[in-house]
Length: 262
Image (cartoon, rainbow, N blue to C red; front, side, top):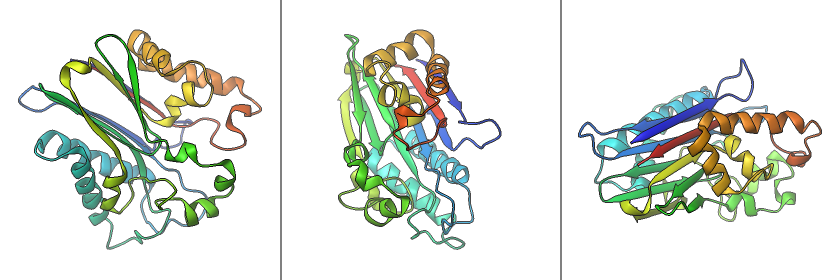
């Protein structure tokens, strides 16, 4: 197996709110890849004493340990346990019912000699490459399907859409969100390589339209994860009027890529 991992903050001096990890069981068979994108809250209270990067580090650490050690659990069950463990770590000090309690998007894959399992929640992306070179994106597109008018203000999003039926879901403090994730299982022979990305890296395709998912995967596989992030930064730098963002989103976002050849 070969892996490649890059995670870069959106701006120097600002904490990177992404998490990335690759886990290998002690038996040496199989593995997992994990990417989390911490959701940066707007200015104002979140009900929590902790930072977003504190949350993603806790949740990512729990996911890594459970994914490698609990082969009897599905990825959805592992997500529920990891959320519960993280929530328990600050339930006594923080208001976890606040709509902006720390939260993250998730892309998770686990493979064994027999199969490849996957889970995606919110706007992270997982790309699966088959033996013929075809690339299949695994996406949770609920946020992308919402009309722009529904996302007009943060207050509107928090009141009507965030972690609500008819809106979109993130990994926050409620373990029940595991049932909202996009999940599946494929035979091991059907996947020769995969890539997990936060939306900051997926901008190359989703925001700037520089190439489709297959082209993005080829950049990572042939040139490396660092090359994709550099290409995104170049596009962000040239979009000085932020035309690609339609007035929303950060000019530079944290960007994370995990690539694995199985």
